[in-house]
Every structure is written in structure tokens, then in C-alpha cells.
Amino acid sequence: MNVPESAAVLGSGAGALSCAMELSLAGIKVTVADLPQFSANVTALAETGVVRLKSPWHGVIESPIAHASTDPRQAVRDNPFIVVSVPAFGHQTFAELLADTLEDGQSVLWVGEGGGALTLAAAMRRTKRRREVQLAETNSLPYGARVRAPGLITASRKSGGTRVAGLPAGNDLVELVGQIWPWVSPAENVWETMLLNFNAIDHVAPIVCNLGAVQGRTGGFLLWGEGATPGVARVIEGVDNELLAIRAALGLRDRAGYADYLVEQGFAPERGETLHATLQSSAFAGSTFPSGPDALNNRYITEDVPFALVTLASLGDEVGVDTPTVDSLIHLSGIASGTDFWATGRTLADLDLAGLGRDGLLAAAQDGWW
Image 1: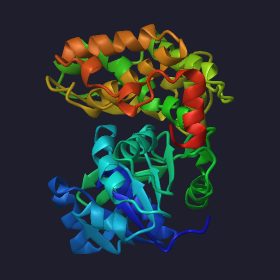
Image 2: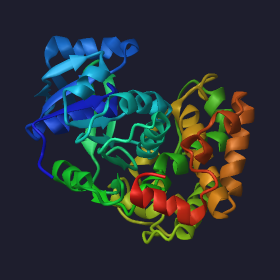
Image 3: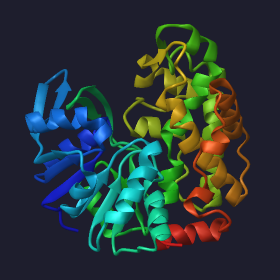
Image 4: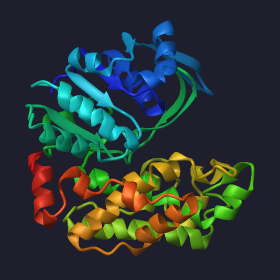
């Protein structure tokens, strides 16, 4: 698949701006578009015409942006290649927008937590508007990235661990992603990108297991340093083992665990004898989490519980794999935050995939339609 001359990046957060910079560096004319409520981010790009990247060794570098817009629909109409990088709780909004706007021949890549491609396919099914488009998604951002100011990010490329899956499986878009992001490797299908959700594995458990410190302090808490005690690390490993069991039930070949991916992504130098040892040797050990009374109003809970853990528990139910650790974290997070995440979270029923069973889920991923 040839690298397109132009592309639209939907979203204006750290992931979206990192992708916009990468596409621009590849010689692609990039339009960054987001919803009107995020106009401050878009205005900063429109005024400067660049995405700015800050790093300790280069200072601030800039990469040109062709356009910046608060009209995502028009950006989609004007470009053959669309990259969507928004939080998982924004998947449905952008899926519905794309389902009404896409035309034959376009391609859509969802970058971030998995589930975007399936959400878009379900939205197109409901409009009865099947277009000849190629979809793909990654399991995580290819970067560690943060927004420092509108239009200004810090970002570093991961050394590996990011997977991309096509919907239908193995389509030409996977090859294109490899050309633009050479350190991103193919996954078997979108169930692999859904299940290799590192945020689901390592975000929720250390918050719930350290709730007193997380809410009782002000400032920062070393979530994977002091927070990832041997006992907490075993809870994280419990989540990982349940997701590994679902991967096995679906026949996915890659059975590497979370600790292996810490090394592959470049966050840990090597796998230790225990997950606790691996985490303590990793870059995560020095990462702070914003603690305080409102700490649960954070994407590590508001995104990763309903749009990762709930989805994965639903997938486990469908293929006959028990997920007691995942279920417990959903339950405890809901009690602590006063939110019924089982009611608000994304399940297979929300994707019109409930009741298909293992073989039906695999067929849907292979064919891209169900």
C-alpha cells in the first residue's frame, strides 16, 4: 500500500499530536481535526502551523501541519487516510461520525487502546452503510507521550510492544502502518490488539490496592514504585494471567506476558525473577500518579475500567474464561467511585458481538463484518 500524500488526524491530545508529527516527518500533508469543545488545542495548531515536540536533548523541534480544524467531518472527506487517536470513551462518538462520512477507498487507523476498529464496524452495520474501506487498530500508543501545552508535547518512541491488526485481518493498511511506524509489528487480529491492553493490566490494580494513599495524599504517588509492592504486583499479574487465558481460548499464538512486554517496549532492562522485581527495575518505578481526593477522576479509572476491564470481562464470558481478578477490580472501582461500571462499560453486546461464541468472534475479526 502506497504512503498517502495527505492524511487527517482526529484528536488533539498527546497521542494524536505524536501521530501527526510522525506522519508529517514521513512527508505526508497532515490535517489535525477535533471536536469544537477542544478548539483551544486546535487554535494553537492553526496559529503556529506546527506541532512542537520538546525533548531534553534537542530542546523544542517543530513539524509542519497543513491544516487544523474543528470540523472532523470535512477533514475526513478531504483525505484518503484517517488516523483516530482519542480516549476509548470517545470511540463511539468518532465511530458514528465516520460511519456517516466515509466513502469507498478510504482507510482508518485507530491508535491507542484497542476496540476502535470494532466500534466503527458496528456503527457502520447499524447505518446499513457498508463501504469498501480498510480499518486497523493498535493495542497502545507507539509512544510515551504527554501534552505540555496546546500544540506542545513530549514524546518518545517505544522500542517495540505495539501491535497493529487489520479489520478484516491482514489487510493492506497493516503494511502501511509498518512503513510509517517501523517499530510497530502485526497482530493476528483485533482480538489480540484488544487483549494486549497494558493500561488494563497495570493501571487499575495499583490504584485500587493503594486507595488510602492515592486519595489521602496530595502531590504525587509512585504508583509502580512504592505502590507496586510484591502483593500488588501479584494482583497485576492476576489480571495478566486472565487475559492470557482468553488469548489462549481464542487460539492466539502470542502468549508473552506483561513482564515480557515491559522489556520489549523498552521500559525495563530485563525480566526479573518476579513481576515485582521487573517493575522495580523499570522506568515506571519513578513515574508519579496525581494523588488527592479527586484521584479517581482520572483516565486510569474512568477509561480503563469501563472501556478496558469491562470489555475484557465480557469477552471472557463469551469464550468461557473466568475473570475473577478483573471482575473484582471492576466491582471495587465502582464502589470507590460511586459508579456502576458494569452498566456504563462497553461490552460485546454494545458491539453487536454477544452470543457469537468463539468461532463467531474469530470469523468477525477475519472477515471484518458480522
